[in-house]
Length: 419
Image (cartoon, rainbow, N blue to C red; front, side, top):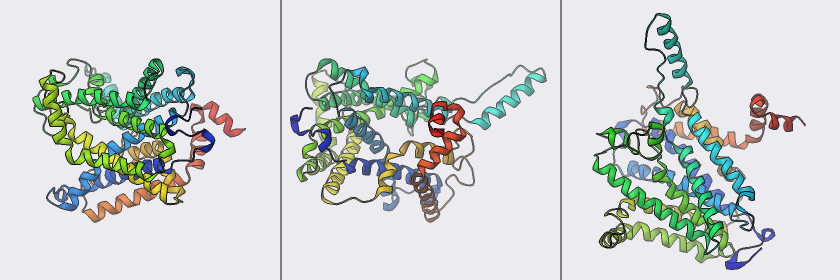
């Protein structure tokens, strides 16, 4: 194994706890933000209130952090060995399996069993009475493109770029991910300009002209991936974070001999501060230049000011955690375990809060949705975070029970459990 640029042999590689710490912070921020945000009444949502403004801004960091850390972890592990042929690499095989799983669960948890059963009942009743309405299912939200699907696409792009790197075999891996991320951000700049042009004020669902959806005339299922009625997590918007995370993961792997040195973490913090302080001015000038030479349209980089600022904040957090990991002994196994079990936590929280799969959840209920004062909302959030901490603590026996109960769907896994 090459030791070029400071990479360490496998036996000498200590576990980088700051990566698990970042994952744990991301999942805890998600839980707090979703449960508090769903419970907090509208009358307390005042941007002039510094406390709400701070919370709202901090909550906006959750998705970029979640997506970026996904890229960091995936590429840090994938780039452990770059000598194997692409399709023979176990991490590549697992990566494609992960993509399939994320796409399946992403759409499956949007299924509403109660609505499906109700529409089936009324459909049969209509046919029985000689009606012509037939079966009309409410599947608009089922076609939405949300967090898991977007992460799945992000991981697919990570694999695609890694394949290109293996094919070309020139230059550092992190440079490939930087270029890919910049391409995505430029495309999103054009998309954001398109959204402004068609007068979207508060999200994609309020588009004044449905013909503005992209690709025009395509099925909603396809439109939602890019820009449609329910493109809450369009891959055009969020894949850039995953690719930037992939770049960071490749940098950490290539220079891991230096990760525990103080200047390495400080460098991340300074880069993050740079993008947050002078990012908008820098991108404005860059837009002027690329527009003048005809390389990109006006606004392509400046439209991404917020995105780069968020990535800068991710870099600041990672740099800070690097310094903590290097200078303090981290002995918090349950906290670190939270970051290693993000997938089941996400699935269960969607079922409880949003009624995923079953159709019954807290947020759709009128008695819960935005009904409480800050103290009650915070208390509800703290309660459910505690529930999920206990779930993670006992995840192994819970997982075994799950596979035993639903063993019919996992015959190989059930056989291993019984051996």
